[in-house]
Image 1 (cartoon, protein in one colour):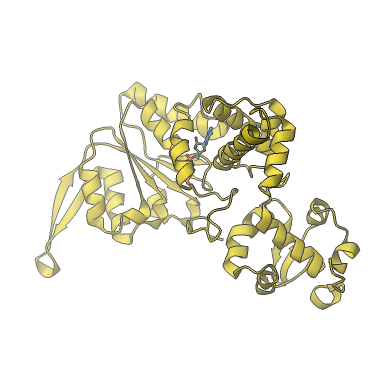
Image 2 (cartoon, protein in one colour):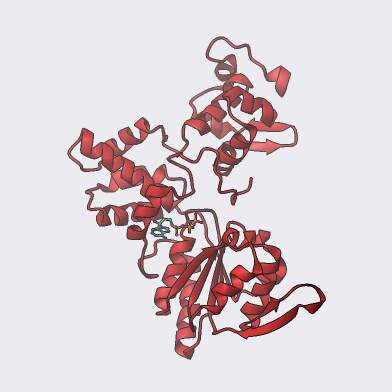
Length: 358
Ligand SMILES: Nc1ncnc2c1ncn2[C@@H]1O[C@H](COP(=O)(O)OP(=O)(O)OP(=O)(O)O)[C@@H](O)[C@H]1O
């Protein structure tokens, strides 16, 4: 799975990790503004706090920072916090937007002293731009090439000191020379339910929504460890609470609302459950090949592999083995099936363990 393949084939999913238009509109209002407000990620927060405090004490520009982690965990938010804590402006761009070294030169040469440059999906920059970035990060200088062929000349351009904040879904995707030029690397983890509960409470307060502790816990438990999803589910639950109740989000209201939206107690949506149900009911828990599984749920191979499976694997419900996909005991338990009953299938499909796994 390629986390960074932002073209999510099931992009309108309530539990999708990429930001949609509505997310973007609301996220600006929900972003924590300083490290104190930023929930969770204790280790990264503490380390970053030291880096920034030390830079401020020296009156220097902060070291370059690399943030790695899945989408929606708060990398953009943290980069804005870094700028705010340093009292510096921030410029936001992304790897795919920088296709030519010239694009990067234009951005770099217009930075002001101390400015934070946030480069999202930094691993998707073009190679020439990447090489230009090495020198810019290390020496605050770039060589702008003028002309072509034997007559081409490199004109050195001095840059003001700046802080690069790079974000990537996996630090391992970066070439070592780039990775080594960051003074600090923070790995963002998925959030624990209690942390997400705090995110939900905070967002509810900002959105002026009344929510009970158990209501926030119910949303948090279904948010797949991701604040972006928690905030999105909160908005849908708020709609439900307004239309079907008195606007207050209790545990029951949150559970009913998310059942309507087909996000189950563990955060699986319709697609995840379809994959798991097919694996259990039609193939006796596997092993079964990806293509067969995809046909069984009427989806593209890529959709099953890139959209549904990563979370199922992370949750320990499905395993990818050389012989095919297999369900774990937790999958049977989650769907309330037993091996024999499950393998019999809903419409009397014969058990198929022998055929597929044995
Ligand atoms: N630690 C946190 N505390 C409170 N809210 C958070 C936290 N992390 C993220 N959020 C909220 O989650 C939403 C998504 O965060 P953000 O855009 O920073 O994620 P991201 O990692 O940059 O995602 P992407 O990689 O897709 O750009 C924002 O609305 C932000 O307010």
